[in-house]
Amino acid sequence: TPEMLGQLEQILIGLDADRNVRAVIVTAAGGRSFCAGADIKRFKVLEPLDMWAQWTRQGHRVFDHLAGLRQPTIAAVSGNAYGGGFELALACDLRILADDATLALTEVGIGALPGWGGTGRLRDLVGAGRAKELIFTGEPLTAERAVAWGVANQLAPKGEVITAARALAVKIAERAPIAVQMAK
Image (cartoon, rainbow, N blue to C red):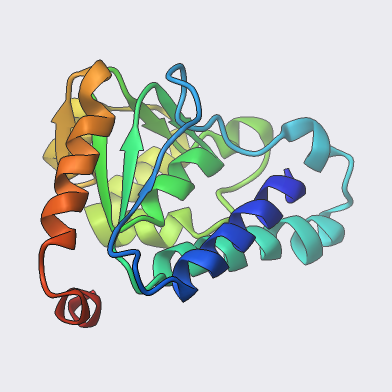
């Protein structure tokens, strides 16, 4: 929702200002799904121009802020990451997937398109041909295929994805913070 995007933006502003934070993990509050994407009921009522002027621009701004954080970011993904949820994971620097995770840009199935930067970020990771296949079909990408294609950095058993993300975050945090941030 726009409210959730606003909350995420405020969190990102705080993280960016906090000199003690050396790595950021983005994950779900529950274990069922990483993020199912945008609330379709909320954006279906908007006129196309309003959709662009409000929803799409806000999502771009927030996800670009996430991608531009000075700290490395890790998406810890269990379950589904569809639509904006996949784009949220793509805005992170690294992705650790539970072995049950599936990722998809499903927007074409409802007459929309991935509007929060996912098309470009996915293309940069997997190349234009593979990105177009996923975007044009809306078909899900399994965790194993995501690793093989370079979308994800590693797999973890479902109950251990947060542990794996924390271990990676600790490894990053133990390095020289200015060097890590400049390398990013």
